[in-house]
Length: 124
Image (cartoon, rainbow, N blue to C red):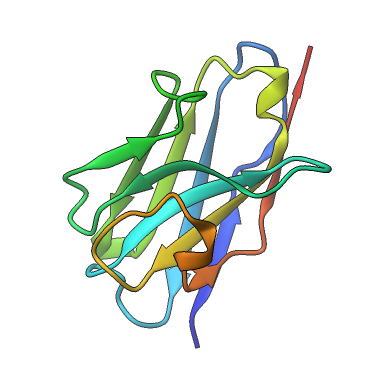
């Protein structure tokens, strides 16, 4: 059974940093794209960042580019999101997702497995 478990969320002040982690159990995900999405209250789930299977190519939403960095460790079946210069508008539940395909998609419907989410709250 595939399980994704996120950790690292919390409360931080504007300008602060957090590092989210997502540990995957089950089949190896070295052939799969991985991504982070977020969902704020009253809004749809939105793409934040994605990374290809080998980690060679990364993709970011415009709102986080230059502030967030996605990385992965295939030996640990893990993906990370380093978030710097956080803003109140980054407040959301952050979800880790796996797509059983090599390419990253901005479409949440194309991802096959999801974590339970971790809350990130940025105070002003």
